[in-house]
Image (tube, rainbow, N blue to C red; front, side, top):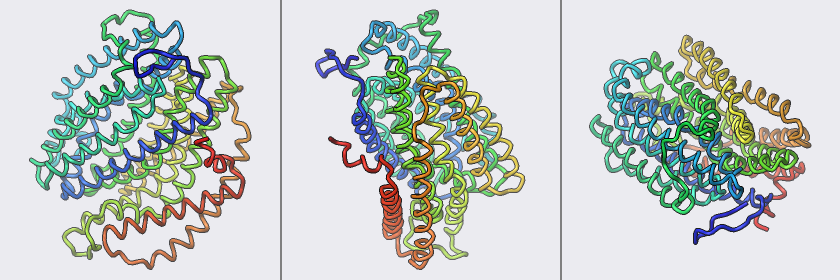
Length: 535
């Protein structure tokens, strides 16, 4: 394999070692932690700045179409086509050909994205009329139209990050999302207020933040993208192969976003603020998932692709086993801790007054949104586990250049979410929307695991049942601790914002420490190896 040095020359490098995998994962976790902290600040700020439920609902739903178009046209293709193709070709005689095909691929989707965004300027209103309340429709459409440039810049940043990850240059991708979130926060602080005009100014600021993000990633990738040559040679067999790999994944990724749109559409008949509560809850459960699972998956994909490219299924199986164990080591306790502290977490993060409101207070309406978000979060908690497993197995299929199976599973998940969500809407029970999502992710996680190991038998998970049993013991100890701790902590009064955040943060850290200690005592080797990561 070859690596590009700072002077532009290349040198040989070995396949990534076990400790290198862990170090790369830790670097990405740090970057993703920064991204999630700044992203959470962004989520908090729009509620604080915009204040009124109809403004926050317009802000939330204004992102739906731009985010959907990104996932439809580019999101999943980076993991399914671009990263595996480059990772397998780097340092071989196929590298030049792979770069040419990737260049055609990027050219094609850049043109397609531009055309789609132009068309959506026309059709945004009839689409959003299916989702937004009629009294809020015009404002939501105006927000969405100002966010369309953001989609184009996010595509450019995403493609650049994919190229860097294919080279295993994870440190160059770690800080970009955090930088984007910081600029979004500045847009909310400097441009935002509780008015429609200010909301539209914020939307423009967010598109500008995406432009800064893209320029930052482009600068960091300037040495590795030198072989990139934009072209229109769409008849090349290599490009067609990439397109065939990407299409099922694009549909798969867009189906996931479509599921989110459907859940938001179900809030149309529910009280004002329901869309905001659903957004808050879905943002919070993504904290542990977006930090740990995404980091591990991004490190695993190019490494697993390399193992498969060298026809080494035993090493590929070890890599998959390692990734799943590390993911579950964070996802399992996170699900339990977030469930135990669900209401305290929502209020601690999103409530910015130094007192809790009385039943007749003017800001009681916003506080009730946070309580509803806590009810929604309780069913998102198990999805932290299920979605993490889905993420890792989807990446494993992508490493084998198989994208149809994740697509079919995403379609099944959408149908389950659609049916169960409809029941929740009829009952006017907003927490049923997150329950629908949790049930569908459980089914898909089990199905993906069964399909993968049926097809790739040499990549079996070794001693995995024993690992699960060890975790059940550690989780039982954690559950007992949480039952006692929640009862005792209920007596702690709400003093002010900083005190509330400090208390919930300290309680969560202690709970994680209890789990880690229990996991160490029952002999989970990943815990015992943490101290050796940097040796």
